[in-house]
Image (cartoon, rainbow, N blue to C red; front, top):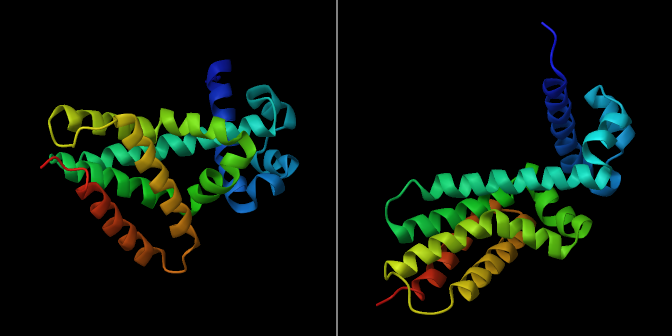
Amino acid sequence: MKTSKAEQAKLTISKLTEVARDFFTTYGYADAAMEDLVKKAGLTRGALYHHFGNKEGLFMAILDLVQKEIAERVETEAGKSSDPWEQLLLGCLAFVSAAVENQNRRILLIDGPSVVGWEAWRKMDEQHSMRLLREQLEDMAQQGYLKSFSINAMTHLLSGAMNEGVLWVAQMPDQEQALLEIKTALSLLLEGWKAK
């Protein structure tokens, strides 16, 4: 049975993104050679340019994919509890854990901000993990779990703390120990926000 153009395009995009993620993880953006990438994917440079425009367009698609996957993990982990405080902590820890994983770290933390620019990177973050964080904090504030202050300020403060925490964990030789320390620090930080 012959595949349609739409199905063929979907397969091509899927193959390119699969190989590109591996290349950007292994070599980094600067050293990921597009000629080698399309060869490994069994495709042409024309296919890459047709679907993504250029190397940066392909990288942006991979960065967006990584951010979506991390947001899905945050939601899944937070959903494992019915307690709002535990949901918040589980979601925060899921973000930190996922961001430092090998297949995400370089794309999200190292190359992402430098390739797409800080503002574009922040907008992508706001659409994914930060959006979930804001929603959780808004729900908790409406239910009376939080002290009364700006949800925007709280969201940016916690997001910034987690992003910095992720960079720290990624550099530590014992990442498991560093993640435990982040969990403790996050728990203490969040305690200060509880409505009495």
